[in-house]
Length: 123
Image (tube, rainbow, N blue to C red; front, side, top):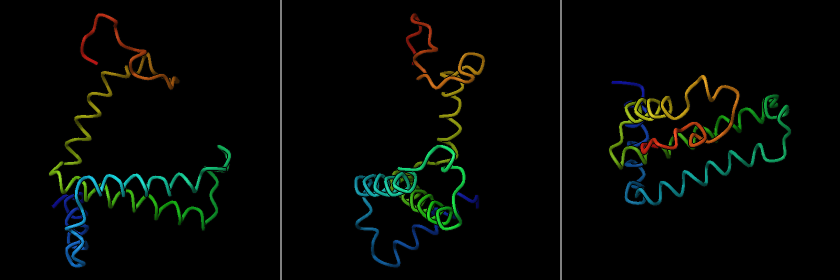
Protein backbone atom coordinates (compact mmCIF):
# COMPACT_ATOMS: atom_id res chain seq x y z
CA UNK A 1 0.00 0.00 0.00
CA UNK A 2 1.40 3.38 -0.99
CA UNK A 3 1.53 6.22 1.50
CA UNK A 4 -1.29 7.99 -0.35
CA UNK A 5 -3.43 4.86 -0.20
CA UNK A 6 -2.71 4.54 3.51
CA UNK A 7 -3.62 8.18 4.23
CA UNK A 8 -6.73 7.92 2.07
CA UNK A 9 -7.87 4.80 3.91
CA UNK A 10 -7.12 6.39 7.30
CA UNK A 11 -9.17 9.51 6.46
CA UNK A 12 -12.01 7.32 5.15
CA UNK A 13 -12.01 5.17 8.31
CA UNK A 14 -12.01 8.29 10.51
CA UNK A 15 -15.07 9.68 8.72
CA UNK A 16 -16.87 6.31 8.67
CA UNK A 17 -16.31 5.75 12.40
CA UNK A 18 -18.11 9.03 13.09
CA UNK A 19 -20.86 8.49 10.49
CA UNK A 20 -19.63 11.59 8.66
CA UNK A 21 -19.29 9.90 5.30
CA UNK A 22 -22.85 10.89 4.44
CA UNK A 23 -21.85 14.57 4.71
CA UNK A 24 -18.76 14.15 2.56
CA UNK A 25 -20.15 14.86 -0.89
CA UNK A 26 -17.73 16.28 -3.46
CA UNK A 27 -19.51 19.64 -3.11
CA UNK A 28 -19.20 19.72 0.68
CA UNK A 29 -15.61 18.49 0.65
CA UNK A 30 -14.66 21.15 -1.92
CA UNK A 31 -16.20 23.82 0.26
CA UNK A 32 -14.46 22.49 3.38
CA UNK A 33 -11.16 22.36 1.49
CA UNK A 34 -11.51 26.03 0.57
CA UNK A 35 -12.37 26.89 4.16
CA UNK A 36 -9.25 25.17 5.45
CA UNK A 37 -7.12 26.81 2.76
CA UNK A 38 -8.57 30.12 3.97
CA UNK A 39 -7.54 29.31 7.54
CA UNK A 40 -4.01 28.64 6.26
CA UNK A 41 -4.06 31.94 4.40
CA UNK A 42 -5.20 33.72 7.56
CA UNK A 43 -1.97 32.66 9.31
CA UNK A 44 0.11 34.50 6.70
CA UNK A 45 -2.21 37.39 5.83
CA UNK A 46 -0.37 40.24 7.53
CA UNK A 47 3.14 38.81 7.57
CA UNK A 48 5.87 40.26 5.39
CA UNK A 49 7.58 38.00 2.88
CA UNK A 50 10.50 37.59 5.30
CA UNK A 51 8.25 36.88 8.27
CA UNK A 52 6.45 34.19 6.29
CA UNK A 53 9.73 32.24 6.24
CA UNK A 54 10.58 32.92 9.88
CA UNK A 55 7.62 31.47 11.75
CA UNK A 56 7.65 31.11 15.50
CA UNK A 57 7.27 27.54 16.77
CA UNK A 58 3.60 28.28 17.49
CA UNK A 59 3.02 29.72 14.01
CA UNK A 60 4.81 26.76 12.45
CA UNK A 61 2.65 24.27 14.35
CA UNK A 62 -0.52 26.15 13.40
CA UNK A 63 0.57 26.20 9.73
CA UNK A 64 1.40 22.48 9.83
CA UNK A 65 -2.04 21.69 11.25
CA UNK A 66 -3.80 23.79 8.61
CA UNK A 67 -1.76 22.13 5.85
CA UNK A 68 -2.83 18.77 7.33
CA UNK A 69 -6.49 19.87 7.34
CA UNK A 70 -6.20 20.86 3.67
CA UNK A 71 -4.61 17.49 2.89
CA UNK A 72 -7.32 15.57 4.77
CA UNK A 73 -10.11 17.21 2.81
CA UNK A 74 -8.18 16.81 -0.44
CA UNK A 75 -7.74 13.10 0.27
CA UNK A 76 -11.44 12.73 1.10
CA UNK A 77 -12.42 14.54 -2.11
CA UNK A 78 -10.08 12.37 -4.17
CA UNK A 79 -11.50 9.28 -2.47
CA UNK A 80 -15.08 10.28 -3.25
CA UNK A 81 -14.23 10.99 -6.89
CA UNK A 82 -11.87 8.00 -7.17
CA UNK A 83 -8.97 10.22 -8.20
CA UNK A 84 -5.53 8.68 -7.97
CA UNK A 85 -3.60 11.70 -6.64
CA UNK A 86 -0.10 10.49 -7.57
CA UNK A 87 -1.28 9.68 -11.10
CA UNK A 88 -3.09 13.00 -11.44
CA UNK A 89 0.02 14.76 -10.10
CA UNK A 90 2.24 13.13 -12.72
CA UNK A 91 -0.21 13.96 -15.50
CA UNK A 92 -0.48 17.58 -14.40
CA UNK A 93 3.29 17.97 -14.05
CA UNK A 94 3.69 16.70 -17.62
CA UNK A 95 1.18 19.32 -18.77
CA UNK A 96 3.00 22.01 -16.77
CA UNK A 97 6.32 20.98 -18.34
CA UNK A 98 4.76 21.79 -21.71
CA UNK A 99 3.06 24.96 -20.53
CA UNK A 100 6.08 26.39 -18.74
CA UNK A 101 9.24 25.61 -20.73
CA UNK A 102 12.12 26.04 -18.28
CA UNK A 103 14.19 28.09 -20.72
CA UNK A 104 11.33 30.59 -21.10
CA UNK A 105 9.68 30.52 -17.67
CA UNK A 106 12.80 30.63 -15.49
CA UNK A 107 12.51 33.55 -13.06
CA UNK A 108 9.11 34.63 -14.36
CA UNK A 109 5.70 34.47 -12.70
CA UNK A 110 3.77 34.94 -15.94
CA UNK A 111 0.82 32.68 -16.74
CA UNK A 112 1.46 29.76 -19.09
CA UNK A 113 -0.37 31.50 -21.94
CA UNK A 114 2.54 33.96 -22.15
CA UNK A 115 4.81 31.14 -23.34
CA UNK A 116 2.55 29.61 -25.95
CA UNK A 117 2.85 29.93 -29.67
CA UNK A 118 -0.21 31.87 -30.93
CA UNK A 119 -0.67 29.20 -33.61
CA UNK A 120 -0.73 26.45 -30.99
CA UNK A 121 -4.33 25.32 -30.36
CA UNK A 122 -3.44 23.11 -27.37
CA UNK A 123 -3.24 25.22 -24.18
